[in-house]
Amino acid sequence: MQWLPQEEGHSGNEGGRAKESPKRKGLLLQRRDLKVSRPTIGCAGRGLRRFCVVIRLRVEDTGKMAAVAGLVRGPLRQASGLLKRRFHRSAPAAVQLTVREAINQGMDEELERDEKVFLLGEEVAQYDGAYKVSRGLWKKYGDKRIIDTPISEAGLRPICEFMTFNFSMQAIDQVINSAAKTYYMSAGLQPVPIVFRGPNGASAGVAAQHSQCFAAWYGHCPGLKVVSPWNSEDAKGLIKSAIRDDNPVVMLENELMYGVAFELPTEAQSKDFLIPIGKAKIERQGTHITVVAHSRPVGHCLEAAAVLSKEGIECEVINLRTIRPMDIEAIEASVMKTNHLVTVEGGWPQFGVGAEICARIMEGPAFNFLDAPAVRVTGADVPMPYAKILEDNSIPQVKDIIFAIKKTLNI
Image 1: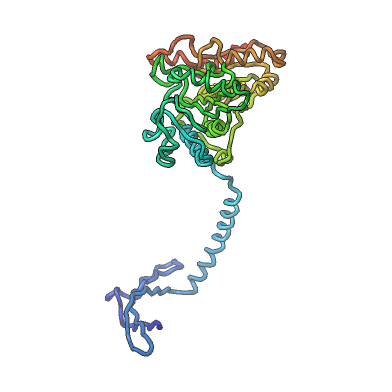
Image 2 (image 1 turned 60 degrees about the horizontal axis):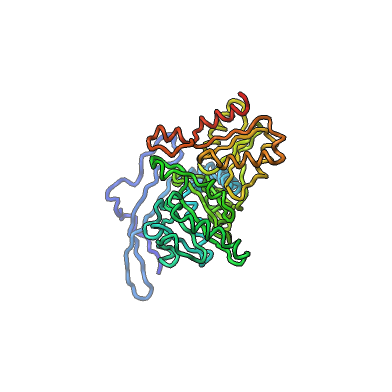
């Protein structure tokens, strides 16, 4: 087939409209007149004709158009080159991920990696968990691996969610006498790869029976490993390490952090990303004082450090990440540099995590480097009140941390 041109007299859809548009003085380009024509298609040998609509573009003054095109193409080529070079140099973008999403992603990846991993707990399946941390896992893995069941059930490599760690007191015999001691009592023949996880510590307006911090409780027991994440990176890396560990691991999360979004570094987005249990992280470098915390208070310490930095006080903030085994070496190295120590935790003061840190520093080589006594910032030594103003005064606030740091530095 071949295209047969339309006769000049046919005006198509233009009707009686003038062919030439008015010329405007000073313009390099004249208006382009679009004409719709209906050409004929001929088929050789049969004489058949068909019609189809095409758009014919007539350009006035071809010479001027060529000149303008030359002026435009040069800068466009240069801009294109700059854009390409800039694109290739750009770093991978971090993603925003809440702590809830990070824990969910970590469990999802481990469930996918190892078919022996499964999740059980109160309302973790069809309800997606009390705090929606297990959202979507039941739909993906089904009833055999995401199970609504009491704590007394046993499994291959289970993840047990407590709706809140305050309820774990009902299972304390199984956690302490069974899970924590079986590996030791079997002379290493029977590992107990189980993860106990859920929200821990003060929340908001849930009063005395739902606001306790169990870091020191479980950290006191040999045979258990205890981790306490702060941000999304901690949550994902620690839950994956806990699932792969052959020992019982208690993961103390914080309800108020579930909905907080953090940038997840590129390396943490890998399915192979793990955070070693027993290793702390320096969240902020400093030279004047060491501030050690875990869970939600890490954020308060960083806020306090930012305020004090404007006054010329540089705080080194350490995120413990693991309560047991504790990375005392990282704390000692920091204290030897700053010569001052403040610990911050949401739990009660007696026999707490801060008390353990201070004792270990006093017993070790870092004690001789202290220029002032170590100071602890803790929750109040009372059951948690219900009223908000009393609740706020019962747990460490940024102002309390600033006061303790200035007291230690004698400012």
